[in-house]
Image 1 (cartoon, rainbow, N blue to C red):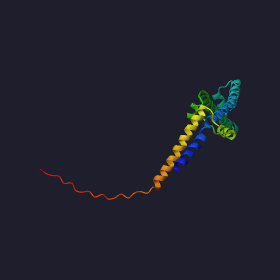
Image 2 (image 1 turned 180 degrees about the horizontal axis):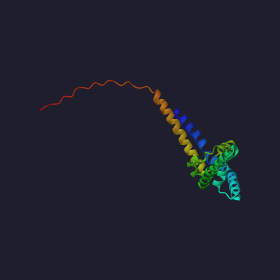
Image 3 (image 1 turned 135 degrees about the vertical axis):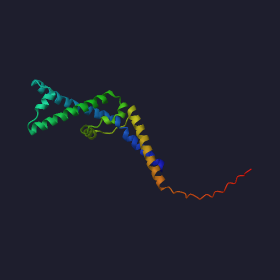
Image 4 (image 1 turned 90 degrees about the horizontal axis):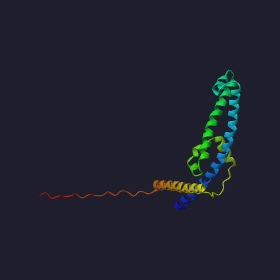
Length: 176
């Protein structure tokens, strides 16, 4: 029974993880759209600063004095930071092969993009090499996880045999 449950755990892991390559591809596509939109905002800000004869830093320095300008400056700083982080993640994901993306889940951490990708994602049968590798890793992970859980539970509830007191006979040695 435990073997069957472990295999079921492995199959669940395989079915789940086999979807990662397709999901990461869709995430990367959405991420590209996010970076394009943020690039436009960054370019517009820098163009406005340039028309006024200012650098980015100088333009930020002038965005003070009122609660609105202070808030707008903070918003733009967050936009520039987000643009830099997402651009780096996009470059890394685009440069990686589908198999290499298996080791890059930390590059799929933009919550807004992740949430929107998940909302539109529809699981499909993985017919690619990365899908097969993911399925294999998921199967092994699910099987190993379930086996470990059941082994731990079995060890907790296993009856322990009482340790019998063993009588030791004295050892006599001859003295010459």
